[in-house]
Image (cartoon, rainbow, N blue to C red; front, side, top):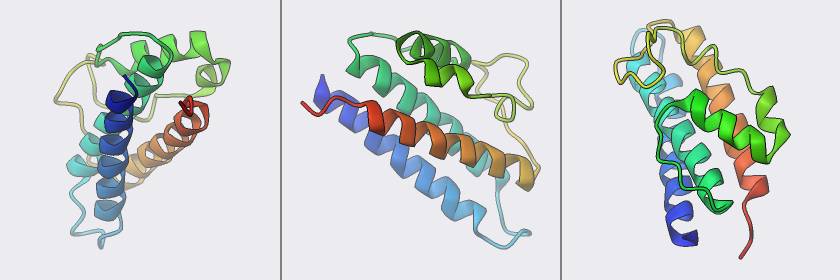
Length: 126
């Protein structure tokens, strides 16, 4: 199981790095969809990795559901506000969620970075 959680974390880190790289382009060249999409998938990977590392088997892709399950294990997750990430979603599980606003996707990156740090600090070392 550790190998799988490590793979989820590594993929999440790569996606978050790609999102950051895209965000650093000049404003007229930024593809905000890529920043948004990569950040959303990275966050899902981080949350799934955390749950799996604690013996939970949730493959649910709904971020709010994953976050809620993480909060039951570690109360710090209850303090994370996903509102900026859910900006254009009718459904949290919808794959067509995206945002055109560069400032808005920058908020999403901050949330992604925060969750990566939270999950990394809580992963068992065995």
